[in-house]
Length: 313
Image (tube, rainbow, N blue to C red):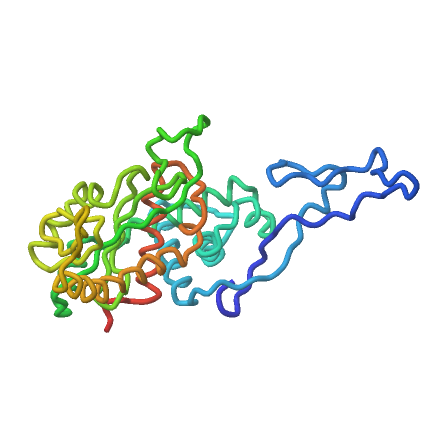
């Protein structure tokens, strides 16, 4: 799955088309229909359920080996006597889940384990990664050491499944701006757009300025370093934003020039959001309980730092 270590992933196999009556042009009675994606078991022969193929994930082998080492240390700490999968295979499944967002059933089928076992070992790896996510205080210390004069702050909406059976716009995870269910995540990026930190998940209905206040970002960062943000943070203390055109009026030439300069610096922060959503578990719908959304985000942040080391330069 990583470099020369290729795992097997599974998808639903295409069944042979049902036989057709040439005279009536209708499906012959008794032919099994193709099972749906949610079906626990296919109709007919169970051997034709999965199509197995090899695949690769664009994650370095060093990251896999690091995670495998941490999993081995954890097994020794909790005195785990026996596991169905070795630490390397478990680490590979965790990284594959974060990168591809395949379902637990798809990952389990090709590795000859049950879906519940696959879910359990993946959650174990995600919890281990989340515990080692970089803290905001460490980001500020390293940013000052690097000599950066300011940081970029932005908000990103991570889509999620609907966390309730009754779907309505009053749900706290429904974002009216994005017209979907999701969670609000605040990102802090370097002046060149490298992702440095991602906040805990808040309900999707929370806007960016409220989320920044709840996390205390202006007080924690704005007092020490400058913060650049878009107009969604207008009015937030210790944060530099552009000028908003007054109702029924126009901006002055100086204000327009200031907005162009501000936008040229702030727009690089969009790269950080793209780097966060490069991991498809955050780009597509999160299939987890609301309480685990933050752990998913922090796990992705840890793997991103292992892959890119934004403070190395």
